Image (cartoon, rainbow, N blue to C red; front, side, top):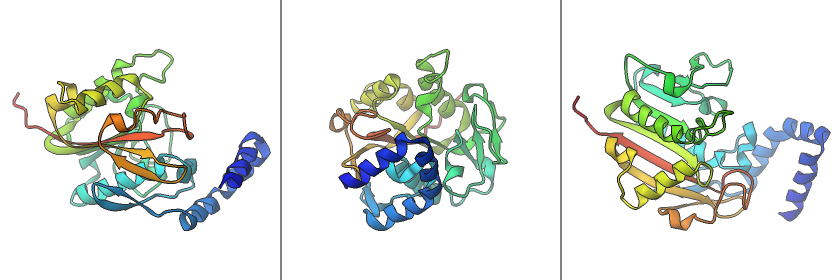
Length: 254
């Protein structure tokens, strides 16, 4: 295992070799899929890891995030009649699986025909959506901008749930642990059953965390205390733990 990691580091440090690595990523994803564990447990069910060449998902949190998003789409969205029934915040899923739903993404320019370039806090729709999904996106909203405003990540969650989701329908979010302090505080509040912007609007169907047990395997836990040391970039590249938040919007009278 150590030999493979040393070879990979040599490739990453050399631009020419790194370009070659990009070309062989499809083969690497197949190689990892054959060699390493194929499933992980989520709420008692075996979920298949996603081994995909895009962004080297076989070697970061995308291998579990995309797998869980795919499960959500299959279980919760199979009966949706049209693309307008589902909204994705930031264009992630179309890079990994075939999708036909509306996507709001402030920056990415893509061939994907249902993509709208707009800040989610500035987007408005005459019709709310039956489902909303967002994969490791909320933590970046006004956090990785030139003009930072960390609290807008929380405002974005509230806006999505309050304005863009139909009552009694569902939302699915993932975001990394120890990346955006405002989101970390929100997670701790939910864990401690303290008042927060999420449970004002929604019923929390499920909140759990999946941490990187080792280089190749991920494991589900249910408390921030279990992932406190699994900070971003500390043990392995990118996220070492992610939060998975599944919600149902309450019926709120005007």
